[in-house]
Image (cartoon, rainbow, N blue to C red; front, side, top):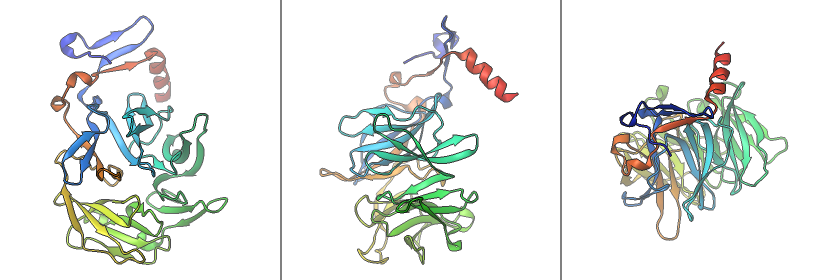
Length: 339
């Protein structure tokens, strides 16, 4: 950890082994952290203690509710990290630095996950493993935006063209693909229920008047609006029940809708709690900033909490410097790419 603020000197140093250390700007220092939110709306505790990270693109809790995968962007690039609730430890899972900065890694099961990478040909979806020695496997071009809890269905955005969604069915080899029907061409932030029977999504005229819809899955036969009296964004499902959560984008309240066990009948939206004013909800391109944690003691939500660097508690724990190893080689490499 380094402290190289301007008050301690010039804020720039080069060691004899060609490592460059320079003071981080305000935008380069940690600004978000993951926080547990109780069902009453009280902030219980932070997932990683007082650690603020520069950027968290999104997160998702594992099917067994014991771990959490999240995307981190820092000066080394974008990678997948994993947090274990029992031990409180976090570890970096991928080390390529090319993981998409605004999409969460998605659990395929308790040992495998799907994530998005940037490359020379654009964005693509890959399968990764937590097991030592496991190799990443290419799945599809495009952006993996939703994965069913059973691991059978994967929704890809950008195939066959940007803005279009395609459903991949992994129950067949090779996986079958089907484009979303025309009446779902305006859908964004799709999420599949735990039993693979319903899909929630956000839709609105030119993505301004946002409402939450649900459609039968995977037939996509009909679409039903669940919040006709208010706006809504960020839908996400209960991990084991037909309960849909979403955010009232006008009031900042977290809402829920309960669906019948056998069809698409659902209750009136119920207000659960008011989200804190510093909740980081992202946008249509960053839909994994809220999730539900089911446990025996108390059900909780995980959210992204934002803060300005000057407002952080224990600021001394937050590094304010960037270390670049072999900076001269990195500089030459980027210069050649620019040419």
